[in-house]
Length: 541
Image (cartoon, rainbow, N blue to C red; front, top):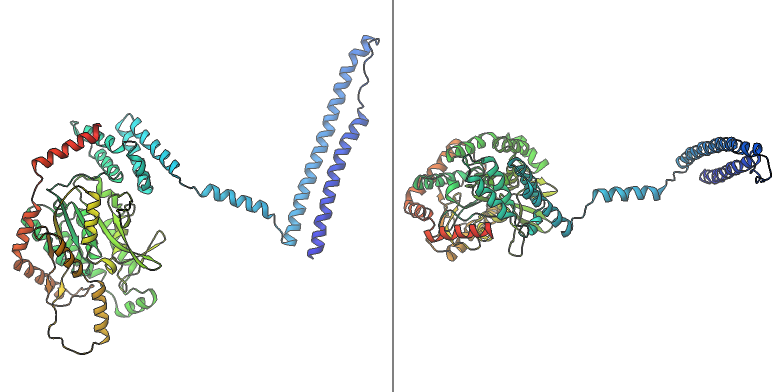
């Protein structure tokens, strides 16, 4: 069948070529026979014969055009028939026109794939900045600044060219000019602040130095940190987001950090959310939980957990928290799965230009609830989180105490500033059982010890306690009267947890007083003068 089909194609090709040749030959021969070339005109001929020649030639030309058009139409019909015949033969033989298919595919790929080179990146960044500077009204400026912000959000390497184009000085000038108006457009100020954040601009700390808050993981034991923060608020008289320049959290600490730093939720509301969360998400039929643990490696309903986060946090992007100038910088820490284990990944509400000094990957382009979801997917409790092709696990697996990571980020954001205060909040630890003298351990005890060693937070504390001055570093992590589990939802156990936290606060009141005194230290007059001078030079030079 294949041989006969190929011979059919070959014969069809010969027929086509022969027909086209014959049609072309017929066109020429028929025209020359019907309308021969006119003879040269003799000068001795009469005028009457001379005047009739052009009319006769015109008539012959029209007839020749008609015949030529008919021949071309016949060739087109034969060509269409040939294409149909080729299609039928291809269906029979299974052959296709591979070169044409490959050419189309390559063309499509060229239209889809765009290689971003430094030249194109610089040109695009420059054109967007020039469009902002060329805007003549506040509305057009706001629109173009938003376009530039969206570009820098998805192309952070464009910041390598913003310094050359003096973007930050121009935005500071716009903000300064807007503040001097009788009626300040707060929405426009917020748009400028967001673009400044994405352009790696960081405002100086509000205190004498950098004030840092770090919150450990620990599930429902996050209520311990909430109560400790409430006591700090009562002593200082300011909300948490105004007391710290930088906040960092992992797992349950990421939830608290997002609510306090990103949404400026009060501590009372934060505690109510925790209690409501335990009664909704951490309620599960045992049979369903075990079957889900076998099939999806998660005891609780992950979809219900995501739905709860979205209902509380909405679709707000991490970077949108920088619209307000008094919002702190914060990061939520997760564990990115890589072939040889895990790697730290920071969901930030700020932008850092990648350099040899920046040790951790991160971005600010994702939504707050997505960042919280990626930081709180404890194995066995919730499913791992897939985001843009990356698999994230609970950040507590590799950094359950994120204080050292937060210090590193602060040094990148404010390289010339001193550390004023570091507050590291633990979420409780069980009292050591000194009476345990058994020579062997059960399987349950071995697994519990393994989990405790992985999520240990005191090793980082010991290192920082030796490295930082005692009047700067404050670690608050009480001993608990019982070993509270991560998914604790029993009301009596939660009340017992809160009593332990209050007992620790009363016993360590002196530490809280010293901490509050350190937090309230303001910048000196010389520092404020230097800050104004730096900003003036930044804008006008």
